[in-house]
Amino acid sequence: MPPKAAKRKAKGSKDDDPWRSPDDHLRKKPRPSTAVVDEVDEDQYQAKRPANNQFQTWSDWQTKFNEKEKSDKRDFANAFNRNIEAKRNEFDALFSRSNDELINADNKYAMLIEEPCTDTQTASKSNPKVQAAKSRQDHPLFKAGQHILQKCHNLVADHGKASKKATQGSTKATLPRELWEDEIASVQELLLYGRQHGENIVECIVVPSPSDEEKSHLLTPDKEELSLTGKLAVAMYRKSAEGVMKGGPTWGEVARSQAGAFGRALDGLTGI
Image 1 (tube, rainbow, N blue to C red):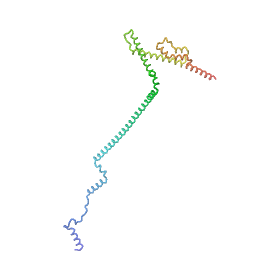
Image 2 (cartoon, one colour):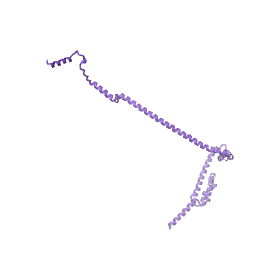
Image 3 (tube, rainbow, N blue to C red):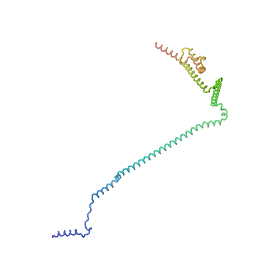
Image 4 (cartoon, helix red, strand yellow):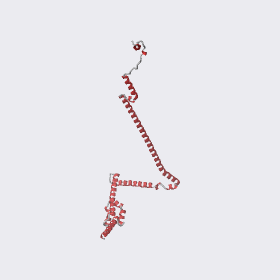
């Protein structure tokens, strides 16, 4: 056998020795399987993108959505409560300011009322003789009150007399309301006659009468033909009627004369 071949054989016999320990064999690195490689890549991908791992299932997404909706509602309620509180504070401030203004106005008017009273009291203390000289009977308000009361007493007395006259010779008493209704009718008639007579006076003033006789008939009607109410109505305008009768030409007559003169002047200018 050649030497080289013997050497190879000797070496090969040494490698194939079954009594040699396992540590003496050359250890090779195991090759990973395909499943293990895919799992490692998935872990690395999830580690790089943690946000995508939050919604792996529908229940997780729905839970997150419900939490966000609750948070939004809570924020809206808090903002609404803050706005309500701000408006309440604003209203309280406005109410307090208005109340202060009313109190100030009340105090102001109270001072305005107190000033005349104070001045009157000061004047009465400084001039007691002058104040004592004026009695309550001299006050205009007292006089007016006395006049009104006297008229009321006279009215009651007149109604009493009228009731007594109405009951004479009759068993039925006339109620005061019936008397008042008669008086109201008389007053209405008086106003009607007075209006008619006043219109006649105004007509005589504005519209020129064709003759003095017609003017006199309008201004001074025959009182014998008038009732008591008509006579009272004519008497209401007695001074006005006398002024129209004795006051010279009325406004209507003056206007008519001036218009006539102006017309004649125009006729003269036309003829030139």
